[in-house]
Image 1 (spheres, rainbow, N blue to C red):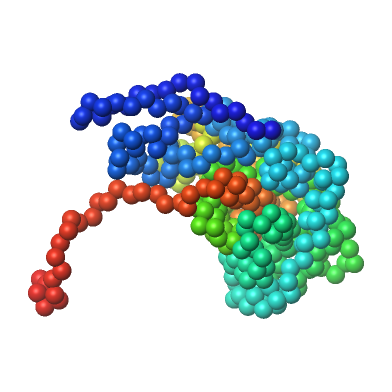
Image 2: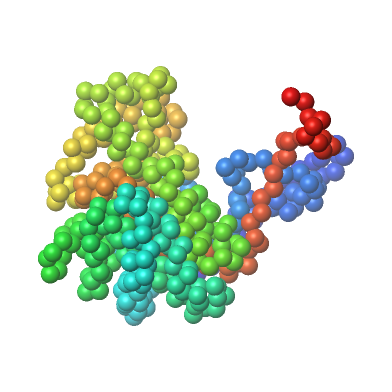
Length: 431
């Protein structure tokens, strides 16, 4: 189902230097920079961080931060988290519609049959890393290396070749992720078990030791599936923008996905839930929560991690779902000892005008780290767990960008350097 372009109003811009004006329509909440440039050629919007710039049109994810709304292809995230599965959501993001039963069977089977990675990726590449390599650094490198194993990946305008790479990337990310973890803790590689569902297979590759078949707790598998749904896409975030920018050069999808994963590696993006765990650990006890809150307010302490969001100015809708999922996980694993600190921190912050007036509410990272930790994942795996589901969103944006025949990304700058000056030979330079 295609969206409808919304053109309701217009604005008029006047160049006070010349008195010339131009009327520009407001389309889908935006103003065309091309129209603006007709009046002011060579004048650029200065927008560090792209906080007020729309670099693309997209039909994938709708996000209203003021109202706390998140929808994939029009479907509310709450309904998808309650009723759907990650693989179905991945299909939806990539194809625009929910699959029929037969379409889903084919999709799931294709993903399952492509979970294995080339032996040389494991033996000669992954095992070549230093023993204490970070799993996310290994994952970024391994994804980029896949482009050398699948030479047809460069045929990005061949529909069949493109679909193969999409399936391979979604299927192999959990295998690469688990392999990176196993290597980092000195455990042997576990091959995929294609009799298991997507998240079950990943948990098997993570935790299997010597048992003939790893028995996955269905509550934990479903909780991970919900977390994967919630993290599958989030509009034009840093890593998705990296995917689109690199993809705009017509790079192969493995290289573009590696660039997106590298952006996710940064602590301001994929490491946010790790920062929450470190904050809660440093607080240490319930008695220290109120002093910590006061130190944040006075500016003498650190930041309140897991609160506030670049886009959401109300409660992150994903946080509500994750909080419910956390209760289900803790019923199986036992309560994370940091949970009581988190709950008290949330209670105090949500009743304090200092935070509510600044629209600082819990986001998806506030509870997701607690769940991952309770399930046994080490902190360094948190961004890796983010990358597995977000691959589906990255690829959906990559496909959309190619189908739109988007221009190669090339932002402008405001030059603030020196004016023209003559070269001075070294012997004539002062000092």
